[in-house]
Length: 447
Image (cartoon, rainbow, N blue to C red; front, side, top):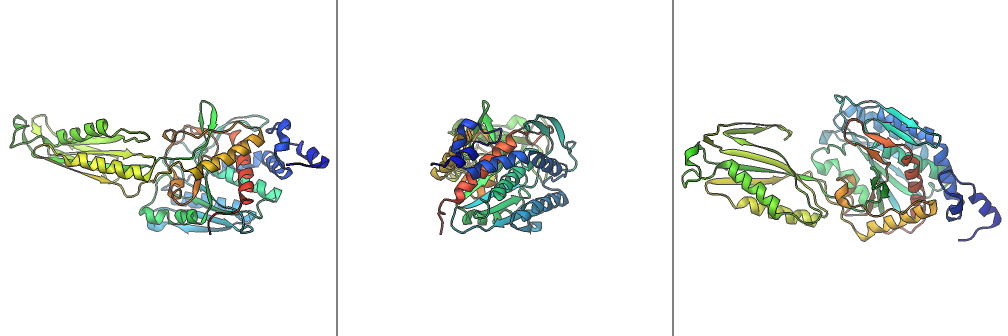
């Protein structure tokens, strides 16, 4: 790429975050986007503070709705047609779906974020606290959702505003879906994720704005996310006096049956990219679990053979094919009962699917690393999928090339003290704005 003298001079006027020695790698338009993002740092951080100070726990429907209205107010002035999709049928508030119509030629992009947090109104962690900010916009701030995912939403806004100011947004075909229940998906999931899945089928590229992950201090790119599902094993047996246990008449009881199953899971299931936790277990003469599946009570005595036992856990895989194979193995283990015992296993129907590491996902990381080189930033290696959890992008990854981790870097997510690295917000916004502008100039793939 070559420029005239005036172009070279213009390109030398860069934001502080972009080394002047690498300025020729950016176009004047891209330089302008970086400058806009730097100039609007205070606005961006102020928006994040305002969003964080509105509680939007997944089950706080009015709070999620209010945050949705705040995001509508950001997107509509940028030329997006915004609609609120109510989710009463799924027991949740709703989603924001915003569409920007471009020139109809470039890649269609889907931007994914979420309005809700894990912090419900009864959480002691409710307010934004600035932990220090320097002249370059660095420092940290704590707050519910400061990173996950209100930080991601302000990166979307900052990037889109920079594109608008530089003139690259007008030709870009972009759809933004901000779900209101990512942290606690409504049921049935077929309704709760219908709009997101439909948007994925329309797109050529999906960018997920949940948080950036660092490994040994290095920014990483997420081209894969594992699934997240749960399972329940219920075991039964004959009850009676403990002196008769292991006999043909009494059998082994429910707890030994459950222990057999759990131990065989431990020994026989391990394989790459698979984890399966046991999070709750109870058994005895009686056993009950609450409707949410998080509290169990049991009664029993040491001299009574237990007739009931239950275990609950999760299952995380790297592909849908791996999920089905592991489920089959688990079911086969459960079916091989001890004498006098029985057991069943059930898998939840609202599980997050896997986002497998595809060549198309790798292509997005390659494009992003070109942006990194042009910004003078280190390249981002692909993150080991064992190092991050599931997310909404997995619902579209079957249908569209996808990438996760476009949001800011944060620590302590999902716990009081969640904190966002303020310096990572403009960096991520620059990456996003330049990447999206370049993708919008590439020919679309789907008919």
